[in-house]
Length: 448
Image (cartoon, rainbow, N blue to C red; front, top):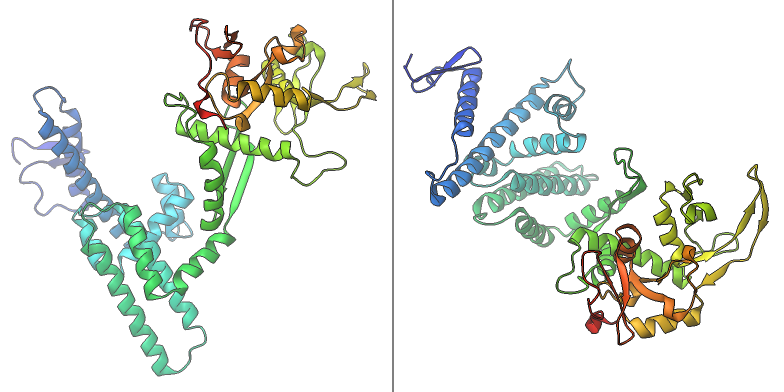
């Protein structure tokens, strides 16, 4: 054994120890090499070119290792080596590799597809294409199989069956060549579009079948996330191409930055846009009616909670649960208020009439004056009416005590101590507590 050899998990590894090694020995050597790299300090002695080259090299090694894992996963599936341990290759991979079911199914499907795409598998094994490219190829191959099965469902003549099999083999070979032959610098998105174009020209039924499957799989879920201690709602959705394009077309204009230095992230802007669209639908009254009232958010609160009494019963937001008093006051800023008298034992004594605060005329006057959110200049369609001197502090519902705030700035006023200042020209501005009062009027370049 060489003097430079290392012992890993009881096995000698190092120069001269690879010949004749079994799988376990080769894997031990690979682990030792990776650990050696991880132990090396990334000091100034490693120049920038060497550092970037090492990242490129590691990415290629990572891809090659992934390719070998997929090759062996395909062999597990072919032998049914999972028997006695799991019900399928994907089930075994999920339980033994710490993958989600979706990830395990994708890995198993990609491994099986690579067994039919030798040129693609060779490129992946050499680290010249990525696992993402292989996944796109696997999806395209699955489309070809589905289209062939549908076309051959009613074919019984031996000559036609043979011709169909030959056509399917030609399609598979073309797909393999397309993926392996021209992927230099091409990410998986571009490869997918290129394969979609080829499939659309080669057999128009492929994309149609895919879109029908996607529509059948559409799904959305909205509910509280048990893992989130902040009581946030979680929204997940899977949409077919047409539905997704419709939602995107509606969200993107509303999710644009309000100004050049909009502090919100892209994800926050998208979340705000989703809420804004829901508010528009509710305010316009275009949604189906429920009982005798248009749909609305239901908040159950008390004067004690709104006024910050320490032992008051917390406000309840329908479908969410208890919320902070600050949040309840934020909701009440721009809402239909229905006073309900409740007895000591919780019985309903009286239900008052619903009224708009502020009136429609006042709302129009505030929009005409402020034109945009006074904090970030978001368009008026994304804004709510806010009482500058809060309602619980006996603020009047008068024009001089009302202003426009978008959802995000409204939250900051109620939760992050933002203040509102009236400027000499009569305009209002909202700003953080650490910013001076002379913030200036809002930027009206973004007026609706």
